Image 1 (cartoon, helix red, strand yellow):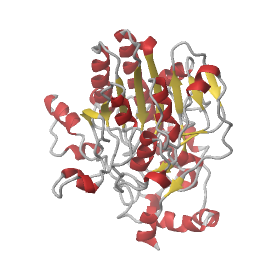
Image 2 (cartoon, one colour):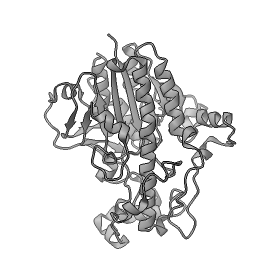
Image 3 (cartoon, one colour):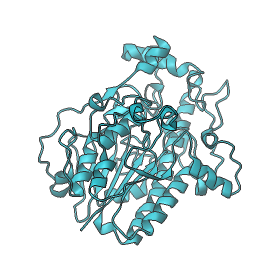
Image 4 (cartoon, one colour):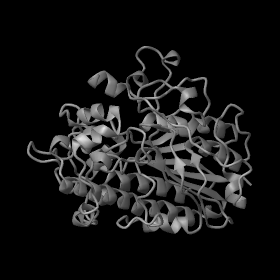
Length: 414
């Protein structure tokens, strides 16, 4: 019998911000419930940052030093196959809800093709049923217009109140109600299609949150008390941070340059109070995504296909979360590279897997689950035997492979 795949990815969700991981403040009851019947890989790592390269790696099964799409905008060679193209060979029509942030091979396009001017195209092979890239979430913008909201440019929806000159962060709730937020819109659309599905499917759902901007609607904005977080933040003087690594001087200068800083954070004015508020908002965004994931899982149960579906939850990369007073994803730290991975397969026991796994392992796992042949040049290895038996047919990894292309820092600071 043909099987289904529900492949959920959140953007910039670090590995430890979950209740099941023992985080004291994270509110993730629905993902925690999924873990109670799934395999959770607690030492899972992305192979590269930022978004486009990490997704290229996850969806092609290739290490970055092979596919070479290593920064947002670096083309992905069209000769490489991917999980969507391989799944089409097996009779699936992989559908995309959200985005893959793919940069197209210019040799395959004419000079006026709009895909030449963005790194946010859908990856070849996916049917972009609901394409919501960060730079142009047009379907969501049209939905908001139908609800009576005035939207001049879709990208304006992600412009949160900037920090003022004398403050590090503008701690205000997002103006768009959570019932019609981007996370809610995406989950509602995907849930509707799952509930109405009659045949096995391959669905890739990619949430933007908890990726910046660091703002979220109520009740999530006030869910976490920043005062409970502030006492856990270490005050690291700039001089001490710079001593950690020669490159940190350039990273700090990059973040403190107002022209280069995200508009919602004024890094040169950050205080412990600001950092605790940003952390609280981030955890609120995680909670909102968790709430919406439950809609998708319920729709799967209502569709009658839950007993025939692999469910995957992961992220593309992590979040510095104020470590060394830095935010976003960069550098060589676990905060940036260590990410969640939860895989549910019917009739398999709940278990926690500690040996290291990598993003390149996801595509081979999906292909084996669907009964296909894993391309021989893929670098990842299927995790299916580990999930089914609790033991891997491969020896445990002693290390994981990752890259960080810091040319943006080099070009602007060296």
